[in-house]
Image (cartoon, rainbow, N blue to C red; front, side):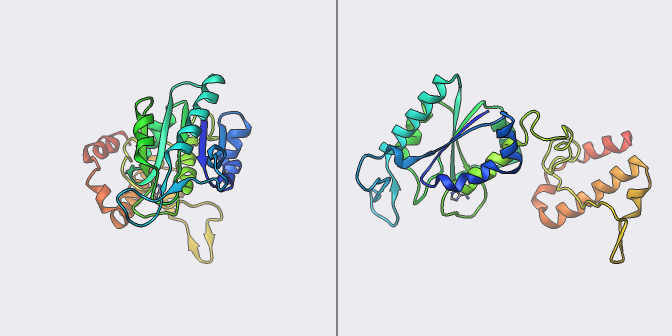
Length: 250
Ligand code: ADE
């Protein structure tokens, strides 16, 4: 997968060199290009923003640097054999970022991110590129960040771990919170490792029973408990028939 990020803070994307994403890059599973938007400005002050039409507070990012930057990124990608780009626009006004959307984005071979600062990007930029490629306007949560760069890090990490061969153990996203299956829409319950007793706290006995059916049932009960406490809205989306079916298999 190829990733391009156009930003006025390229150094903000340094974490893309670390951990899972960094390793995926080193292995050639991810081909990441971070670009400084100011490289596509032509004035002495490298201006990327201007006052909003219609008045109001804050500044709006200008069409020309974004248009020139995106044309240049697209030309480079096509030249080096990448095809079918999708544009990812992080914005608090976007659709919610979910595991389902992460899966969908992981199926695109080429993602171009446009994290904005200030009040956002002149709408004409998004409308222009929407005529040429799928555009996803994405919010990572109901809060306002100072810019979209942190959202790019979040989205990239969620997408990268879904790419074939990136996670060590192919099974390890099977039980993720929000993964499809009988545990869909349930948050994962608590996990334990050795030693079996620590500061007088023992691990739940069922985990030592070796009884897979009882362990699976316990994990599901804990997941239900945690989901009820933290995300009652998700419980409504659970499918009791899927639980019954699973119980019969245990
Ligand atoms: N930019 C500012 N806030 C954001 C959010 N919540 N999600 C995505 N991009 C953003």
